[in-house]
Length: 196
Image 1 (cartoon, one colour):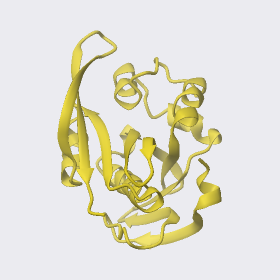
Image 2 (cartoon, one colour):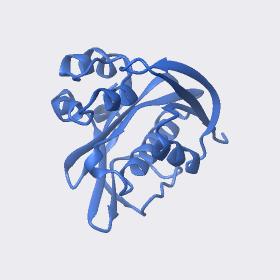
Image 3 (cartoon, helix red, strand yellow):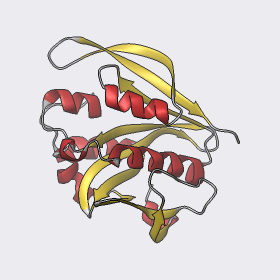
């Protein structure tokens, strides 16, 4: 799906950490956070090399894109998220690529998953991840009218799990995955139900 065709483009200032879900969807979103301006926009194939740089080691890549092989290549992104997912979204910090997320298993009006959530390590701890996930929730709710949003997160990713909990996501299941070095990791499946 091409957001450029379906969304109103322009900037809209938002209060830090807040999205008014009833307001019109304007893309890209912008949030000023002290010394940073976060923006979300539709990711294009031209952004893929920057997205590949967000996962510099095998474990980081595994958390971001478990089916990929290190090092992440543009071909893997094209054949994976850019072919089989929708709403590919790039997070910018002062106009520099800083993070990425997308939507999959979309059933408009019913449910979807937010996936491939990643923020460049050098930009973590500054609200970028929250801004990215809140933006994806807003896209899912306002563009696709889904009352149920799901996502998955590995159990060793405590900062992400805490963020998802703060945003209202609750565990609904789990599965065991094999990490690149052969160890077993628990992947938690979380969801948040919104009123219709």
